[in-house]
Image 1: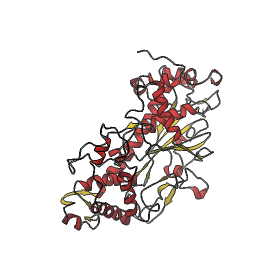
Image 2: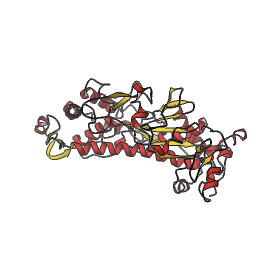
Image 3: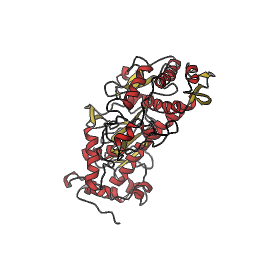
Amino acid sequence: MEYRAKSDPLEGLTEFPLLEAMYGRRSRRFGVGMTIPSGPTAFHSSSEAVPLTPLERATLIAAGTGMTGWSFGVPFGPDHPNSYAHYSQRFTGRTTPTAAGSGTPVLFFTDDDGTYVTNTRDSQPEAVQEFGEGGAEGARRIVDVCEKHTTKLSDKRLDLPAKSPHMLPPNLWMANAPGSTLFMPVGDASEQVLVLLAMLLANGNFIVDDEAGCPAGNLAQFVRSGLLDENNPTPLSVLQQIAYEGNCAELSFMGHNIMLTMQAMGLGGLFLAGLNRWSVLGAFAAQGIEGLGFRFVRNEHGPLPNPVGLDGVYETLCPPYYPDMRAAVEEFVQRKFGPGGAYDPTTQGPWNDTAGIKGSVEPYSDEFVACLSEVAQYIYDKYGRFPGTFTTVVLTGYVQAVHLDTEFYDTHYRPGAYLRSHKEHWDRWHAPSDSI
């Protein structure tokens, strides 16, 4: 099928071939308004920087964190073979997968108009597939939900200085530049660890602190009751490593979805990691660099401060937002089994008999909650934070989107340096008066 530009840019976007976006993906850093001061590709853009339009920006947000309908959860678990599995933390399906439906990531972003966050993790779908029959109408439904769940945090662009240690030197000339939109996917490792820990404990795994050579807490009573099996050990280091890898993968999926959509839209930009996450989150606030304004906790267990959340916006399941991990676990359990929680039979889902399937899942017993709390508190007490071996808030990479300066690529690169979508971008996405 031939791809054709449409009067409605979202209609044209839905017809752009996936493989063309995938195989045509490149880091195209040079946007309108930018300058490379010297070297063999020195170039000064003849155009002023042009920020993304609200629709362009919203389309990329929807690609990264759009609510797409109900997820299907994990249908079976051997620990409760006669009921639906209890592993999922959420049944809100989004554009990117998350381990056991944990769904912890949110998307921060900044541009010339300010700094924002889009949080769709607890959005409630209305259908199994929000995209429906496709086309512009389906895409716009997903875009609109993202806009409803977007909060403006500041009227200013993120105050990230273009100098060391806040950026790697190769990024100084273009990162967070005027006209760009910088996307910052962020994950909550505290909830991710609790999701995986609950799954392991439910299947009898005995959590061992392999560094100290002892159980991860006072677990003898849970062995005696038969809840845990000493012959089925899981190293604490492995649990935390798996959780961190899960967070990193989820955030990378978000970035990659945005990147693929940028190819289809005809936008330039790249996926990058060369920005100091502590600077971005706000660890240098005392030096006048506010970043995103996250709260940090310092202790003797690590040389760097630990980001734990953004007060009132994105608070993790650990102190200082809870007095201890036992209280955090109670909140975790409520999110699953409390009113409005994932397994509340009165809430919606993807099944023909949603109430019956959700009603088949038994809430955690008091003993199980006590066991989960014991291990979680052990981790916190040992490391002074939760989780113990990496940051509570995870930020591993970024995506920057710009309007591509095709003149730069025509000057310095062979034909094929950009896609037909880049050639057609201004006609598809902008009014004639916007063209450069």
